[in-house]
Length: 262
Image (cartoon, rainbow, N blue to C red):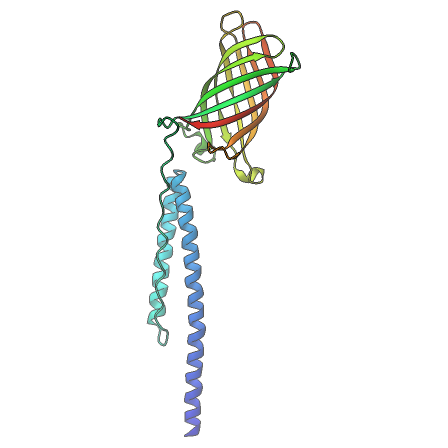
């Protein structure tokens, strides 16, 4: 009789120990599933913001599959003898819509870029010329960024007008600019927000009171928040050439730019 009682106690103890170990494993599984769903939710939000529809649908399918596997596992564990029911995995945190972007200074919502440049020509009182410029910034309406494997907002186009003076040759010109920027992935430059810029310009009115010739602009830069409340300021180093009918300013160019929404 004592042997039977002892055997019964031993079996009961083994069952209790197995239940505790199993419950711990299931709890770890629940935590892992919850963490994985949070990661997928963040990726879905990022893909939606970048308008990557195909990637977003793939992630949503992945999430649905994970939820089905978890529901099946939970049902099996709940039905197992001696295992207490496990609380369901809490639903993923709802996606909070970002507040609408500001309509701008005048409520028009037009993205612009104001910039000032110094072209080092080695001539004149300041050994170079000065350029003031204003551009309208356009989104990548042809989807070129996605075509080359970059983000949907990686490429921007710009059209603008500037005023250039000096440079040692008494340049006075109004160049029309057409160009664009390519925003480089942050991990390429250690987390810095860098970009490539380039385009062409054409003097619509200048020296000789007439039109000029085609010039070029190219450079690389970075953006930093200076606390102005107007977005990140750009600092660019490159090469620029502005050609009126009779005078040309060309050389290494330093540009500082500031985005402003009108």
